[in-house]
Image (cartoon, rainbow, N blue to C red):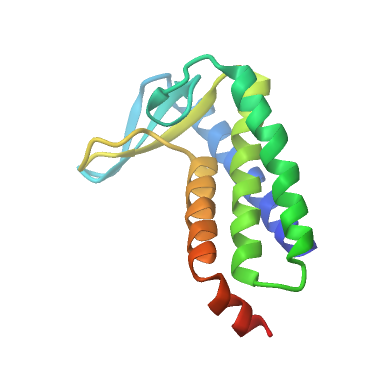
Length: 153
């Protein structure tokens, strides 16, 4: 269990370092091509969730974080001898929730920076990736829990 919390903590640090670099090196709205026509770093401030929904609803995001993080830690504890896949998924959800929560509490918005240039997709950050991948992994685990449990035993 501790190793997954350490992974979550390292991912939060990574998220915050990338955000710090972007804020220190790019002006708001400025884009820096990384792979032309594929991927850019673009400094964006998002006071909502994905696609900027629920703009300015800090209380909502705080409540969700205050429920989700302890719940994931409890599930991680319950699964301490279970599936590593599920434990990693929970660690990713914790990292994503805390990474964006830090921004919301400290800045009043979330710093986003990764932009796909080849398709219209919201600008996102490391915490968003952790949260999305973690939630998808939780769903995969839920769909195939019986198989995961057999491998664990």
